[in-house]
Length: 174
Image (cartoon, rainbow, N blue to C red; front, side):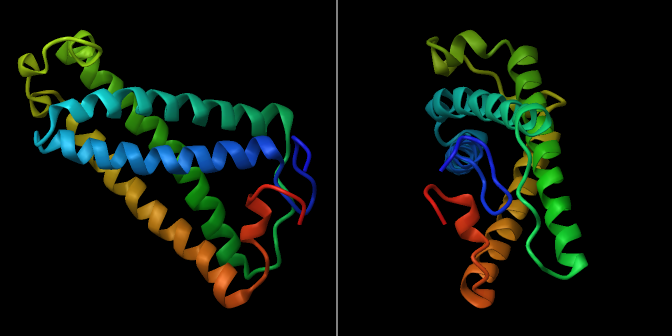
């Protein structure tokens, strides 16, 4: 498997970014809801750094597609499915970037950075007092909806259509 994509399969870089991002998004959503409910302020020590890594991975992924690689050819599917697939992927990028921006905004406005990265968590202020909190929570819920659509479509192709679509986004030769 090459670093770059070929017409039938995604390359190692795209596959690695995809699956690492997926794993980290699941972790950041879980830690974010725990921290957001103020059940576990220590979850912010996981949530914030991983959120930054997801932001960086997303920027690397966008740059990779724009300047270094191309996506494999689309598989044969009805045009509405192709358009829906493209829309979900674009929305993922937009919502991830927006959610990261609102998270950064909350950390900056609240002055929570030094607390999250080693201070006394008991001194944290309530993030609900800061305007970026609402779009951050909405973004998290939109990401969950997009994940459900994305995983559902991948499973549909893999289990029902059996068109090998999911194999294109995995390591190794097809």
